[in-house]
Amino acid sequence: MNAYDVIVVGIGGMGSATLYELQKRGKNVLGIEQFGVPNDQGSSHGSTRIIRLAYYEHPSYVPIMQRGYKLWRDLENISNEKLLHITGSIDIGPENSLVFSGSKYSCELHNLPHEILNGDEISKLFPAFTLPKEIMSVFQPDGGFLEPEKCIQTFVKLACSLGAELHTGERVLEWSSTSSGSIKLKTNVREYETESLVLTTGAWTGKLASELSLKLKPERQLMGWLKTNNPKIFSPEKLPVFNLLVPEGRYYGFPEFDIPGFKIGLYHHLSEAVDPDCLDRSIVTKADEMALRKCVSEYFPDANGDMIMAKVCMFTNSPDEHFIVDRLEEHPNVFVAAGFSGHGFKYCSVIGEILACLINELEIDLDIDMFKTSRFAK
Image 1: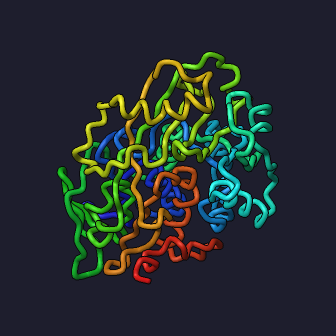
Image 2 (image 1 turned 90 degrees about the vertical axis):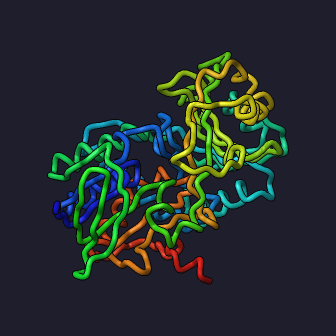
Image 3 (image 1 turned 30 degrees about the vertical axis):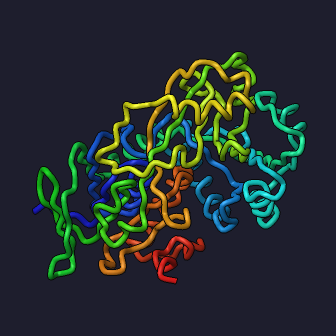
């Protein structure tokens, strides 16, 4: 039997950060990943991921994200890797919408520097946009993007340099509690025993934590890159990362970086529930393209060129679209971080720290009550 203090299952964004934070604290840690590290099978790929402080989803995220920013910058300093790119972020929507009013409220509550802009002002400052005058926005200068694959590689490299073990191409089949209170784990390769188990398994979490199977809904998502007529106005110097609520849907996007083209996605895309083991990631349909193009043609006309590339990924949605970061009620030494509902990657650095503190029974100077599973029983 291969014995460890902690086994982390799923070494994407959350799992790689957790592996690093646990190993940094001197634990004997194993990471198990069914694919490679990094990979494009889950939710932690696609070259760029938004990071922002203004948070329309709920203002309680802001202090957690402030801690996340510090940890991302610490990671850059320790690794000598550039991971975080600041472009500013802009949340755009009707004046009475949550995207605008929630973002504005979070900035005001936490004294974040920000600027209120209407559609004309947005289009003048950021000429990639063509927006109606009456639409409103919150521009927050600290926003930007992370490079997800590089972030994962950096966490794993540092964790392994400190002594963590990593097994890739290995899938967990089952786990159970032993009479002594430890966890026995069986994969397609071998068996293990661990004092604590962490499930950072994204869309597969419901298959490994049955008590959460009805709370976690994997959903097919698509990211598209479209050819631009004027690449200069889509550069990181000219275009902030954005959330945009318009009649066509709620979209998010990025400046051109790494992969050629303007990257854009539609939240909850075509609302397709999926089994992650059955999802064909190679299929991109005309309906997929049109879901993105109906926004681009109207509000980003200089990016309405050929679709250069599209990548399928997944959201794993919780019922309220807030995160689940907690121990399992029936197995107090099994910890889960899941249900990130399409807005989680930016939090990897701080979620890794939170999980490491929970496992080591250390105080956490952050309010994470909103992430507890007990909220679903209310």
